Length: 479
Image 1 (tube, rainbow, N blue to C red):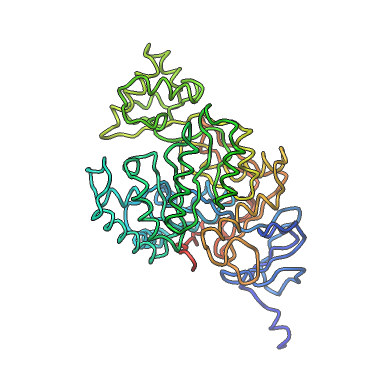
Image 2: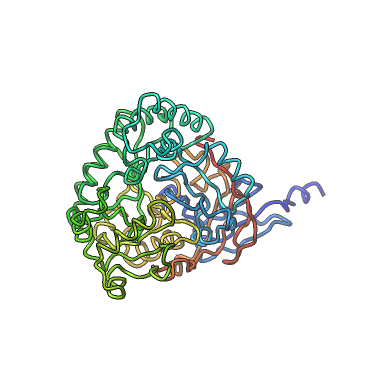
């Protein structure tokens, strides 16, 4: 009777018969995985316990839940706490606070996440742009004073104490655009226990200069530095991946990348200049990305009828030049309203080199319900197009770059590997079928191929259907 009772474990879940790709980069192997509570408690050839829930993973891959190294899902999680577009990619943790974004202290953000009870986990950076705005208000178009930097440092120190991953910046955007390198170094020094991650000042002609600034900030701030959504976004820098990768290796940088040749931002990102009424900056900006036919309006609140159309198409309808259209868009949204564009400006041969490199992890740079397909398709696109179809990298290396690599870089303790006593964030997917379906004209189309997802040990997706579980939680640096 006692022996029989010892075999009864109704609170456990057995993932049985799957091909385990554990996140470490090791080769796939057949193995079962047992979950109890929020943890992985056993791995190997395991017998079913009496009363145990069994998930049949035969013919499927069992991997750690994917970590989206650069995500904007936090902005939409209140509207969709089920995070279906993330879960159907296999994402169990999203890393937010990117591009310098910050609206309140990290401690308060973590409290909000707990109240929302999302279906996925969130880890957060402290955003330089938001810190700057909170201290300088509307008077930000200048270098910050020492007193202002001191106030920013105090806010950042509190965020680091609350478990922030480090400092993020978005130097192509206001108000970070007006900061100098010295300001960023002084802030980075406060974040030295974490990392510095940056949407650099220029991802086009002056990308190499921008990467060098990141190196300087990391070196003088005495912390690791990472390039956000690395890209070479203009003709002047296409095919310079070897130079970029040499810098990454020499300086021991890391980076993240999403698997698309088109970026999304505000239309102002077509030029680093703020002289918006100067036609010449837009002549160059459009030429850099191959012409107005490569610029598609994805959001424009003053005239939604323009959304989904390229500048060329809008010009044909209105009889106006692409430059005048750009200037109108900026004027009508400068004080209020929203606008964004999807711009085809990268070369796939460059993208492939970034995807292959061992020091570059994966991200979506996407949001929930966003107008760029990366928000719903990035991780299955890596596994479907670049692993299965093009064989750019092995399955185990792709999964390492989705799991243990970001977990180690961001100091997410006991996550990113399927290992005994680690947190049971797990995805089970069909490697023959996993695929993205989102496009620029149907950006919300869900990916397919993910069969089961566990978040903190809670069964969240079963047989490709949401269960309604919302077991996500804030994840602090080193905790």
